[in-house]
Amino acid sequence: MNPIVLIPARMAATRLPDKPLADIGGLPMIVRVLRQAERAGVGPVAVAAGDAEIVEAVRAAGGLAVLTDPALPSGSDRIQAALEALDPDGVHDAVINLQGDMPFVPASIIAACAGLLAREPGCDVATVVALEASAEDRSNPDVVKAVLAMAADNASGRALYFTRSTLYGEAPVWRHVGIYGYRRAALERFNTAPPSPLERREKLEQLRGLEMGLSYWAAVADEAPISVDNPADLEAARAYAKDNA
Image 1 (cartoon, rainbow, N blue to C red):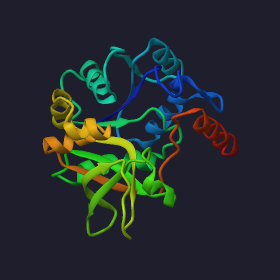
Image 2: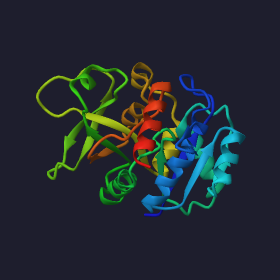
Image 3: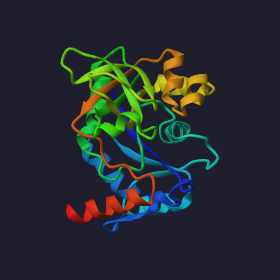
């Protein structure tokens, strides 16, 4: 397997405008994500940017960035466009789609996603989960939960469903972490399919893949990384950077 890591980013975030360039401990957030992806060592890393300002910031930090059409509707569409620009000959047979709002994502999570894709021949799309952080996670619609059929080692499982709804029972509730590892053919199939009924209902694009019959697997991480979605998250990330400088 020969993966490439692509990080989609755009400025027009509703809850936190200009989010990719938000300063966190002296670095733009997108540069912090880039550095973590480089540390994972799973393959070359590039930012699939929807705006010229993001490209400039990444290149100023010595990184690789591709300017994509700002009108593209989703991150998966954006990485598809960047992949076609960077690798028209199809050298890379797998793509790690790393969200640009996880400034401290451990390199181990990125490596686990790529490793699961390499290890499970029946896996079309790999992702990552972590154990719920609190009881409130179970009923919080902003926390996406993964329903898994666990493998014997309890370190990974086949994803049966993803939901924002409350999950009940005594079994662990797995919190979904926004990273995907696509086999290239699966990414192309996914992006040519229209949004599915379940995707529209739950506002979760991975449900499109499940409805199409793609096989999703998830690796279990020790904990979910910090994700920056709003001003309060940004302040928490800045405090974390200060405490861990």
